[in-house]
Length: 301
Image (cartoon, rainbow, N blue to C red):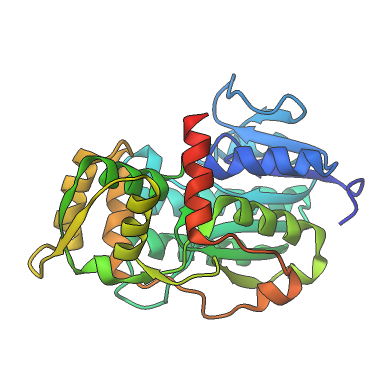
């Protein structure tokens, strides 16, 4: 896409991904409009800002006016645990109707990586449902499916960091042996921006992950070595992900409405089954240890 072709809307612009994506697209010369729920969100001064709320359809027309491509980066978990699936569903439906009326041409959605099936966690199931709602619109939806994103301020990273720093001995359920494919936040931003620039990605679904497949146990042990910490992980068969989510909620700074659905999803293996994106956008992917070092350095700053 040529930078002069139209405006780009970033929903969830004040979040972990949205802030980074805004800065990246502005640096590439795009005209960026940031959709936020409150004034004074502290966004990049080069971006246009508009207040709107996904659950209030009357606010969406102004946000989407003149938009060529919109990034869908919102989720309802921060609004509380109860009913987040319904809120996600309503928000996506409201967005689709408003985007169709505004003549939006493309939507790029960052959702969760995971197998389909009845045993998915509520969080992953909701992320997939949002993707299906967006794909029902009369615009081309690109769906990027990511697992654990490693970066300062990200919920998954901050949970691992807090566990490693505060619990030298961890009694954990068997989910510590579940495999996942963590990806550095800078690589996620590069894929999001790359999809905007490459029309071959329009209307398609891609798995995105880093260069390594690790268990959650390996991730925490390697994190501990990098952070110069000592941890002992003791898996036990009687501790379920749901039970473990309660003590994780007590230990970590991530709000329970966000941390608990994430923890309950750790029984689902999240690895890339299709690497087509690497052929279309051949980016140099960041190894896990380097992603952790970059995130810790950003935290210190």
